[in-house]
Length: 63
Image (cartoon, rainbow, N blue to C red; front, side, top):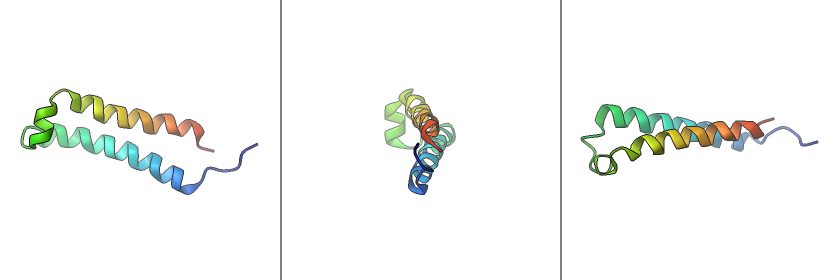
């Protein structure tokens, strides 16, 4: 049986989820003002939600 999850794994998991959330918030508030976000367009939602889902999938290995 495996031991508890390393604290770095937990930190990375939380950071990935927070970056995804921040990506979506920035997209809603200032996406049109930021050139690379405006160029990406609708893919901003895919990027933000993908980061959140990756973080959530990481929670399955958290012990």
